[in-house]
Length: 130
Image (cartoon, rainbow, N blue to C red; front, side, top):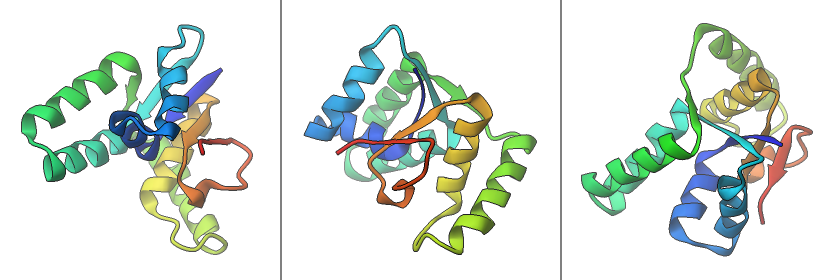
């Protein structure tokens, strides 16, 4: 299976929660192909800076980079994200541009989004962790 790992999933993994165990099974699986949008690196790094320190933020970033391929935001993904953003903001309360970038990245790679973020609930190309 191919996954885009969302910030929510990474944070659950790093916190060692029950939901994070589901993420761990994907990260540890040699059969699964894993991608992380660069926006998720920024979100996880910022959270680590806020609640931990820069050393831990760097450690988290390094782990994310070695455990998944980091996908930069390019023009094609940006345009797709804009289209997704306009469409889903009409139907999903609280949908954000970062969510759109994650979903556009997954679609560009033919992946499922691995997340626990309820904004993604009901979308076909999403695996919700509980």
